Image (cartoon, rainbow, N blue to C red; front, side, top):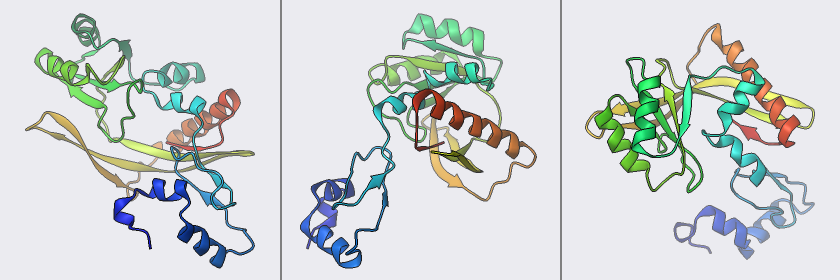
Length: 226
């Protein structure tokens, strides 16, 4: 027996505990099972069975919000006006005055020091006072910030898979993110696949497919992304 509560799943799989191997050999003696793993779980093979899905280091940079926008521009995909700045007050104030059109800006941390999931690396800043607080928060977490004009809309995402012979693009999903007034933070609350964006769905899917094609062409990517 293995105490699951004591070990994260990734540790259990990487150590290939004997009980896991015996269980797999029992249900799959011919070793026909293929595993789809997590993007950050470098694990292959598992008990002599192939594991797919791990993200190569050269693909990870495309998830960095301070890197991807320049690629979108080259690929002909529109993004909100933005500036890449250091977490420095003078640079931030100058960019804020340029980008704030009345509803503030969104700050996004880079991936230089840690990986930010959900809304952990984001901040909605509406005035200079909030800007100081956000810079204090991100100062030791990042080397660069992307500051973009705040665009009113519904946060959403699209999952896609870059395959050897094309790109599979799925339906858009709503990203449930709320603004917590007491802490002045964005709070990620999950997602919903019941949302339907109407006529805009195909435009969004076309841009996602183009992104996948460019990832395959320029980085030889074979992975899923959103």
